[in-house]
Image 1 (cartoon, rainbow, N blue to C red):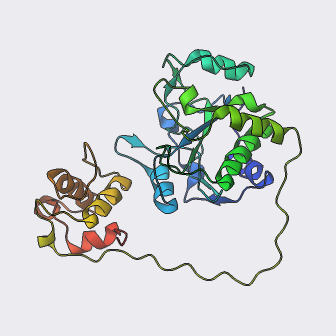
Image 2 (image 1 turned 180 degrees about the vertical axis):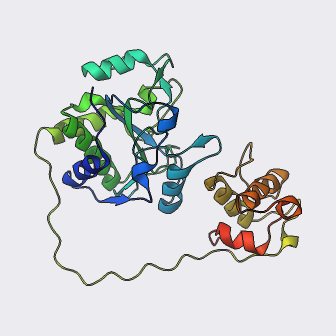
Length: 299
């Protein structure tokens, strides 16, 4: 049981453990505290994000979507092992879980089966989401596993917890499978070994010439309003739908997919309204101004 770390202490703990940390947007004030308290904290929960790609995953986990507002975690761990901080405070990551599991975490004992969903986990756990599709095929690079180990150990070290304070979402809430692709027992073994020693920061790198600027993002040009008609099948429509989901404008029951549908039109209409359009100007048929603002990645 502990008072949550301040934003500065959390950042320092992660960097002291040797992690590369990126502070994303206004992460220090991005939270769901208006929905309930954050704390006392009892442990760290590990998830997979069911996403791919760094920028889109981090944005989605910062903003959330219409069905689940952000932040979705406190930190997002990409496949290269970088931690992107996206929230500080109450986050929408744990949901309702088993009170017996919480008692075991507090006592740092072996976990019982999670067979109930009666306790607010968002209040009591730090959450880290690792970028992975969670389909059992998407790989878990060693750099990413090491970062999960380090991030969990950093929080445990700051609170004087042991490895039994670290659990997976699948051990908390019935029906969840994340993280899928490695076992939490193996991860706790790694964390226990790390906590037995001092933090191990990587050695300082020699001076390097300035890195080349990354290539400028490329976006799909506006294909014209006539492109968006029922029956149109294109990867551009899928890319558009994913951006609409990321912007919290999803009206999809399933998808999005490549075929233009009424759900696409309704989702785009929500985006137009978000851009400030109304009436006939928010009919769900893309126009150049709103399309350019959406920034659909080049496919």
